[in-house]
Image (cartoon, rainbow, N blue to C red; front, side, top):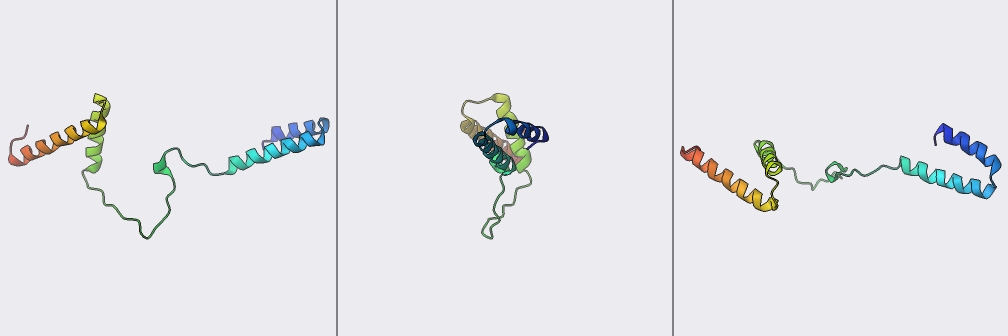
Length: 107
């Protein structure tokens, strides 16, 4: 409870009946408990995770961040109605470009 609120409650408690003072003290206790309670993050990726001996360790491919960044940029640029279909076509085109590059027909 902030100092100003404490001072206000001290002055106001002299003027109000005991029942009202108890009610306001209960409200203050609830709010201070809520402020102290840990809040779960809005982003589930930032939520704390439980350590587990069964949790599988994933190894991220070296080219994954760049690929994901490029795909994200194209989605934001084109604003497709169907992101899944766009992704399918985008990555199909990338596979074809990679095959052509490997065969020596780079576009």
